[in-house]
Image (cartoon, rainbow, N blue to C red; front, side):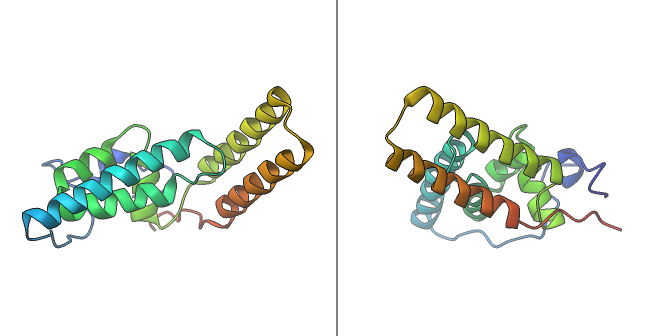
Amino acid sequence: MSCETNTVAEAFDKRGRAALEPTRQVGTRLQKAVFLSLAAIFFVLGALGALLPGLPATPFLLLTSYFLVRSSPRLNAALLRSRFFGPILVDWQVHGGIRKHVRLKAIVAVVLAVTITLVLCRYSLWLSLVIILLASMGIAVIVTLPTAKPDR
């Protein structure tokens, strides 16, 4: 499967299960409930991270997938098939990174969001500098993420 032609559907077997390495599910109902709760919390944080500059989405989505695969493989498969989050997670899990166009879109989104915020809100110089610093840290994280490598 090459990075350029990879689709989310290729990451699944014929029964719709993720075609990634198998993992051990948690044993007790309490463990499953805790893992599902953690997955829900990290999913909300990941969704917020997709919308808010300065809050990263990818680490929270990876944690969501980690807890779902151990508590509800069916929900994890649904997350991997998700139109918005699935391709990023599949690239990370199958190819070990993010695609260049995803990196570029993320950086452009952060810059646009911060620019619009600073222009429209007219914050003090000190608060504006804090926002720019936090956005710069987010961009630095995005730039340092590994690039997805296609299978050869």
